[in-house]
Amino acid sequence: MTTITDLKPTARRVMRLRETTRTAGACDMTLRRWEKAGKFPKRFKLAPNSGPFGAVGHDFDEVQEHLEKRRASRDSATEAGGP
Image (cartoon, rainbow, N blue to C red):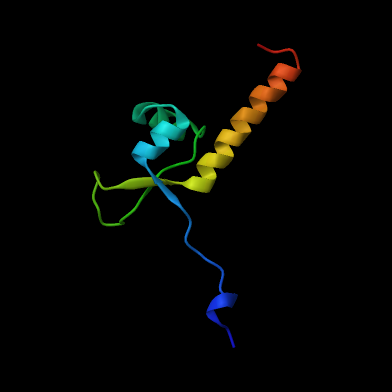
């Protein structure tokens, strides 16, 4: 029998756009360009029927992973004698 303590949490943290722009250090339009180019995790609608101007968010773990990769690439470029 499955108990509540056996269940793993399925909820993942969602960052609203304001928090994402602050965390990434880029404005909304820059994030949109990066998303379109595949250089940043894509946003998703928080409500499927919210229309074109509905609330959106980013997956917290995806954004953090992206930023860690960017930091790592910066560090490896510095070690390799890059700018």
